[in-house]
Image 1: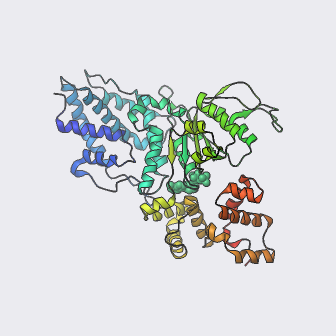
Image 2: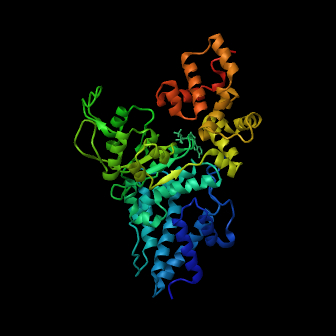
Image 3: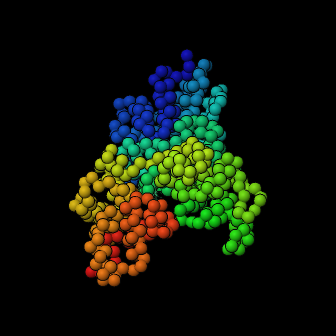
Length: 505
Ligand SMILES: Nc1ncnc2c1ncn2[C@@H]1O[C@H](COP(=O)(O)OP(=O)(O)OP(=O)(O)O)[C@@H](O)[C@H]1O
């Protein structure tokens, strides 16, 4: 028995699952097919943004929403009329209403702030979710549902709009970021885990220039922010909730001070009390530790304490303070190897790796789907020259096609690709790091002519040693400098449009 015919039951069950699936996994395609039947439009196996038409709708979403809109009144009536309703029928119906409400309000969620929108939402929720004589055991409160929907919308766009490419490595990356935010079970997340996820740190590893910071920002911008139905507003502004600290760019004292804060007089130069990021971070905020592999042992111990107890003390103070936000860390180092070498604490690694995201290299993505190069170049050209992008793109593509090997590996990944686009747009040339540091004629001529500044010479030499050793640590050891300085010089060399090396034409 039950309230629905078999076909309606199947329809509701598929829509409910569709609303709660990971949109970046291929299972979504099967669910869309199950809902739409013959109306289903096949596209690729994965959802990825079109750079040339970012506003393009995903083809099966409008027909599914229309189909649900058309059926919902009748299905509600079936429930109201039925003497015998199965619990799964009620929960599938409620989740189908959630699906409908999300898509009905989706265009308006983009603009939060004061929310008269919530009143409309609440009226719809009351009308659709209340069926005379029936109780929905697991129904989520409307203000919470509203906050969840806004979160889903933010998370979807933070991931979908920023991780470009229809390759499987890019799709797996999008899916894994989604899981990091919502876990693999979004129903459970909405019931309870949304309160707990801030307590789990996220570790992002992968080669340099593969988007680790981009992902950290996406996760930070996707945190759950409660909605207050009395004041009609969200409780925290999402925009201010990302607090980054680059551990390779600061000295240990500064890192501690940035992170934990300090009391006046705690060290030379501490002329006043200072709140650190951990204290300043709101509950829905995130502290991002970039280049985690560079962290000193003593600070690793303190960080472990923060993760285990959510407590810390400012430098020079004994008072215990609480950290309420989320920790996100990133490194391009092989942490298990660092542990074996005694440079990274094993206990800290195990605390961090429960939620691990690995970023694929650009070469991996291109090996799977070479056509992604066109989308990426358009994306980066747009970021470089805005409206001129369509006109500049052919120039960039032609230059790359004529000057770089077809199988060029892009060792600097997306950052190098972006650098290449900028160089070609500005100078109509780009020389990869390897070619630049081996351009001995240029160097010798510049050296003989005395046209190099000391900075340029040092940056050029740092790039040469880094190229030879493949490691900032080893380059730093050979040059008698610290790692941060070497990295800064190599980056300066790359950004200088490397090939000219100060030569005056
Ligand atoms: N999947 C991607 N799609 C499009 N652009 C990307 C992608 N990944 C990275 N980028 C772009 O590449 C540049 C470098 O990214 P990001 O700084 O996040 O890399 P990273 O892995 O943190 O680098 P590092 O390890 O050197 O700190 C940024 O401009 C970013 O927008």
